[in-house]
Length: 401
Image (tube, rainbow, N blue to C red; front, top):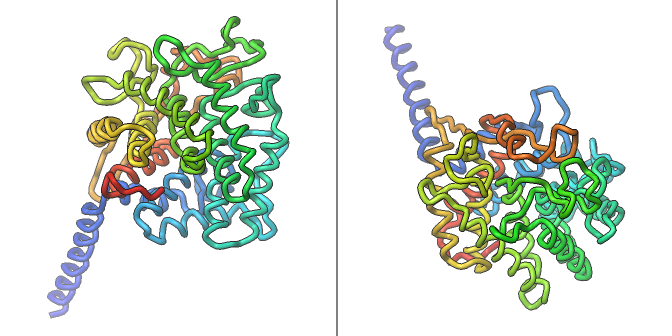
């Protein structure tokens, strides 16, 4: 009798576990990836357990993705995760643990977007204080002779496409919230400098970096640009324009300027989409299938997000939404690996740091040799952004941010 009862209990437990697994696998893919990210990185700690959470852009892109999932799904767990991760670093008086203002790193600005979201949602002054600290960094940031903000104190005169995603959406939203519309002049100026100096005239695509002084070893002595049209650099830039525009009123002349930049950049990226796969290669101007060139996950996810959101908001034509849907289908086949209730996002380049050391030379080989891993924070964050648009937003006519 006891053995029968034990068998029934075991059967019941197995049934519950099977039902839980089935329920998990029936959830939208984006929700499953978001839930796994919260389990993998509790408290916003991207490094192994026992390490300290770090204020930086990798946590920033994960939180941007989680924020997008929360806005699209309105599930409170994602809001709580963002708030808890930020609270691990922002003290009650608004000071930010692990943040070094003297580094003048634009990578430190990205999480500022979550500070602004949390301040508006909770009205807690500590978030305002912390956001103001980041705004003060922008005001004091070292600049080139033409007024372009340096990537960091350690890399004089360097401007990167990446930096616009770190900087511009926060800068524009801060200006909107705290009624500082004059800051939009500077927001537009940063985009303008990069477009003027790093845009390839024949393709419309943009080089990853620009050194106004032309003193860095990798810089073209005539133009100051780096050597390669790197996909993820272009992805950061396209997302930056996409996420900045909602904070600029359409009646403001700056909106038309930024939208025209988005349309030029978007057109160049659309032309570079591979006809066979529906995706984009790591070095955008190299022929598909050329030896060593390959398709990397975070960059194609960034393009998918930018196209989908910009089309939804009317900042790009509907054809870009169609392109995004094609890419999203291909991404799920190429980069999503499922096992039971688990989901793995494969094929993400880990570390690229143009100009940080002599080896970071911006050559095609440099980008093509960079390590590729699964479940990298940049890939996960980009996946959540793309998935929030492709799976969770609903109607293409939905106009909410």
